Image 1 (tube, rainbow, N blue to C red):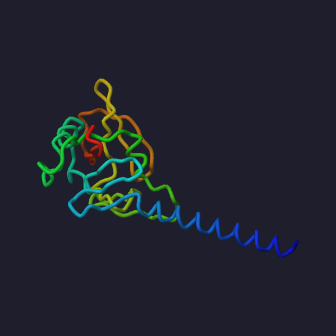
Image 2 (cartoon, rainbow, N blue to C red):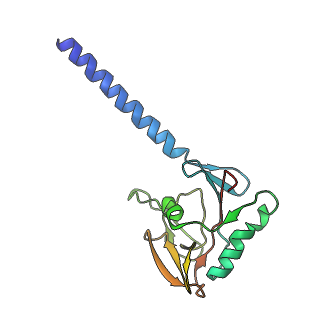
Length: 164
């Protein structure tokens, strides 16, 4: 009887180790750098621009930039758009062990390292009247601001992989 328990314990331990390894591998392969200025998110089934627009933009300017797509990718992919808050939120790394990186504007951000921001505030496509939603990658929260504001705000294009 003790031998069976020991054997069962080893099988259970092996199963847990294997499950942990599989989830680690899955987490590591969620974001795939395509080597062409894009990153594929295998969980959400979207493609992100690897970098933002690299400068201050109002919401209208961000919307235009996202709709056209990153300049170096024009003609290679279509159906670019502004991200939803949920999509932006999914890029935030909440793990306290992850320090993040410092952006050129001097702000520390905690976004998946496959995507490089030039500053930590990214416009979402969610807007109402004269305001729109912004995600803060420094602290991991969203808020509303007037669409005409542009200081330190960025555009990060995304597109659906299914063509929609």
